[in-house]
Length: 418
Image (cartoon, rainbow, N blue to C red; front, top):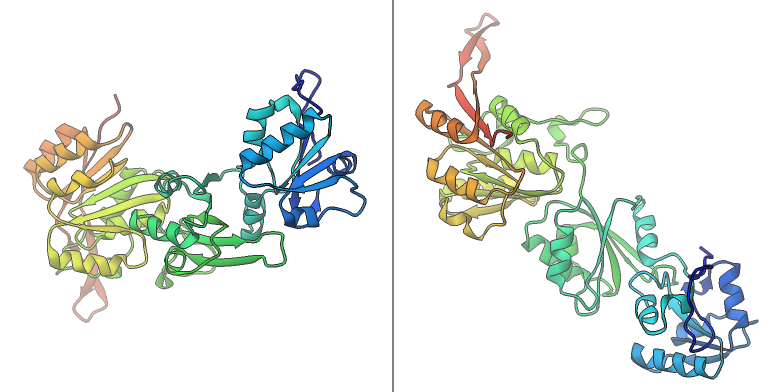
């Protein structure tokens, strides 16, 4: 953590001595080099809280930040021109959404000696108890909240820096409105200080809560082994799909049967993130299992019948699946372009509309009971298989079983690889 921002090949600004930028965590700086920079400074500039945290052996003149950042840089330039060694104080890692960006633009990167403390984001992930080398980090501080939401929606792990005008609960509401799948949420505020507050919740709790506005919000999509229904719980992790039909409320057997669902899910080759449409969703069994298996997906379940849509909303409660009531293809206009689509039947006009919107590398899986529709869809998509299932049912009271055939279903998928 001690490194300075210069090296043998760096060209320093000729307008004065180098500027030391020292990060603090709470009331501590980190490393011998940072402590030496403070002791050898002629002038130390920072907010009152950080000035109060300076060690007793720092004899430099202490100047509180005069106002906007531009004024602080003007003051730094003025003292450098007088030959003073200036030290700027910052919170955490000043190179991470901090003063380094503007100071380097003003004085040149070679004029800076940077001594970071752990960043607020590093601390937030530490409090959440997870590694973050695969995380996306975005800021909603002085930036549009919509841009932050769009950046984190497809990511299974992310951190968002919030702001007074865009607090954590506003982020939560925006994510829920955008159809974000389930997330584990850790809201961290005042990290490293006496008032540190860490709250663990979910998206609903984030949206409904009230949190310190300056915070780091860590968002984690649960893995497929995390969301096991109580009926399926066994010792150890369980990965399951093609779940029993009675898991979902449905209209008189109008549901993609478990075995067909299992085949369709395999053909969808679900990605870790992206957008999935389930059109003609009915009970929503396919959409719900996709959301469970790939929590990073944004899942939209489209259903035209009001009674089925109401049933679907109940099935989808708490899952993050967005229920869209209306008739395809017209209702699809306002949805984001899909990476994966499941079509539970429907006409070829819907399939054509889907193909027009499908993102590059996307996959469509469609099921049909009628041979003529299946043949036409297979011509368009490239691949088809018939799934015929016979289920064992009791034969009288003898304890024997007979096989009861379900109607065969054609599963089409593609586009076929070039």
